[in-house]
Length: 125
Image (cartoon, rainbow, N blue to C red):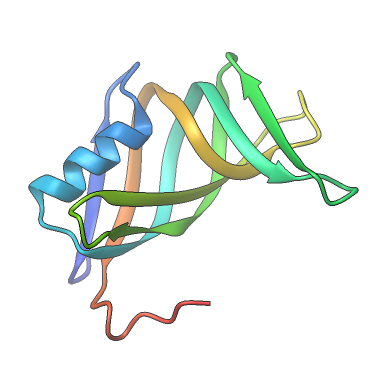
């Protein structure tokens, strides 16, 4: 892996958001970007903008393969973490197959690659 790149490895049934938060704490991450993910998720909830501009929630228990990820991890002034993990799924079960992951579990092994970044060099927008 390149400099400042890290891999978060999850096992079956691990909570994705909690595991990312724990990893960020253990590795003293202030800011990071999501680069890639390999694996599947299950029992998940995503929030997305629907066609008429409303915000929709999709919750499915079925296993879905992750196609792409983006987003960031940021440590707040009070020491908590904001996890903004946008995912795109290889799914035809619902019209909302991408959005912000708010909850979910790994389905088998799941690898999420991140890159630590200096917040002074990070473009927010």
